[in-house]
Amino acid sequence: MTGLAITARGEQSVAASANDSPSQGLLRRADLLAKLDTALTRKVTIISAPPGSGKTSLLRTWSESAAEDVGVAFVSVQRDQRDAQQFWLAVREAIHRSTDKTPEHQTPAPPFDGEAEVARIVSELAEQSGPVVLIIDDLHELHSDDALRGLERLVADMPSSTQAVLSTRRDPRLRLNRLRLAGEVAELRADDLRFSEQETRDVLAGSGISLSDAGAGALHQRAEGWQPGSA
Image (cartoon, rainbow, N blue to C red):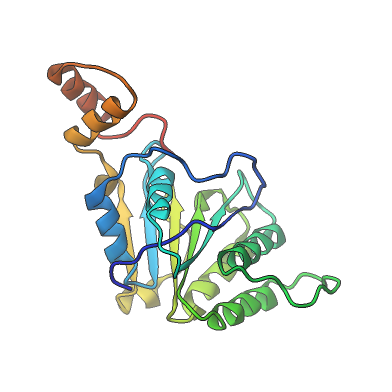
């Protein structure tokens, strides 16, 4: 999907929050957004960088430049998430929201079965009429081995019309060797996310902070290219 544009209408947090609306006024980093567009030609994109590197801000900025023909399911993993069922229910709900789809029949939930839930999600993705991007932010907070094994199956079995973006503070505990060998994994790391000195100046200007050229340059060096307050 070259030149992909996306929308955040499918955003869903594993832990509901009143403050999950897309961020406003974020710096548009054209070069980095273009890298993300290119990465989405692969089945899986991993954004792995430490806290403060702007991963979430990047994804929100990208989402705000959206077209309406791509469904985006945005899941923010809650802190120290250990409940596989809660995680998968949030993923499914996000997919429904992204495609403006609601289940046709409301029936009592059967006993939770992780493998069956992953198979159900794959089937629902295959039924979509257009492309879907599944974004899982803060994946480092997912501490359920069952959920992580299920996520391995999901990204391996997703239809070609679906791409996954996994954003995390450290490399995810997922076995992606077959996808890597097939050239289906793209990665953005800390060095890709570092701000240029000009971008640091743009952030300062957008925040109403006035510094001399020397002062802005010194701040950029001290921050080592990171934007304070980013996640």
